[in-house]
Image (cartoon, rainbow, N blue to C red; front, side):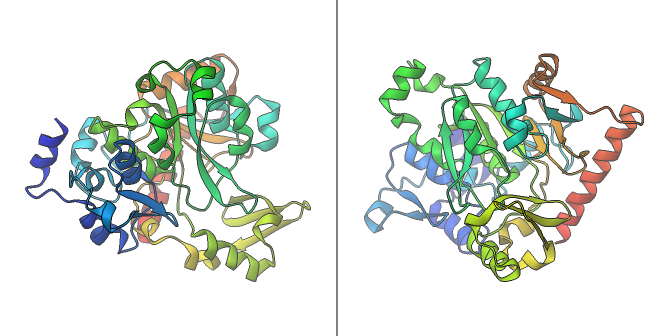
Length: 369
């Protein structure tokens, strides 16, 4: 089915060489890791991620390429499949489908201490682990220098390391490449008898979710094990080195001194010595990744659930349920008191429409950047 669909889309199948020419060499790659994840999970031994960019492993490995064209089609920056996906996932505008929209926050005190804004994403994953609805989750962790690292975690205890917001790229689809190489200790501990029946929750940015959905649309591995997709609101992302070079120059601060960062009209930094610093966003323009400048997705329209702080009351996060599975999940979390909803002062429908208008305005301004 996949092969015939690809041939129907274009007479000439485009390969990784085309992906390199069209996307990577033009600085449009968003470093999602989808192409490497697919290729490596098939044991083709062709691609690798090098400095957050997909590359041929070597000239010898390049000759191993089957030229199937899948890497080109699943790239979130290429146009094939988009119209078909819009039809399948009921995407009628750039905000995407909305089954419900609310502001919520966690009821878990430990998550309040480490989470960003309402702590919603961490609480969703906690709920899914505690109710045995997932076996693992793809998250992002920081190293000591605040460099984001994608990771596949297998228990709720590891959630603490993944809390908070990242402003530099983390190749979220990359960990799925090792799906069939899970350590035997984990397999025994989790009683995983069939890898293909693993249940995974995936957390990523809108472009990463788009790549994931393309993979699921084509019914290809390793995306088949992802049961829940959670998108983070994302206006723009930064090159790690350029971002922290600017912060060093502007505020004399290094990554190891930063405890937490957030964007609220300005780039706000909370240091480990409990000092609060802020930088005008315009100052960071030279650190913005070029692929973000052509992206028209702010809230993650292809996800099951979208979460972000924009438009949310202080201490809360906006939660957009887009699919039936996403809507049912949030309703259960509310009923079981994992999260609580914000009660707006005005009529609920009016409040929701105001938020939708805000997000459409932000999408419009994002396109104009």
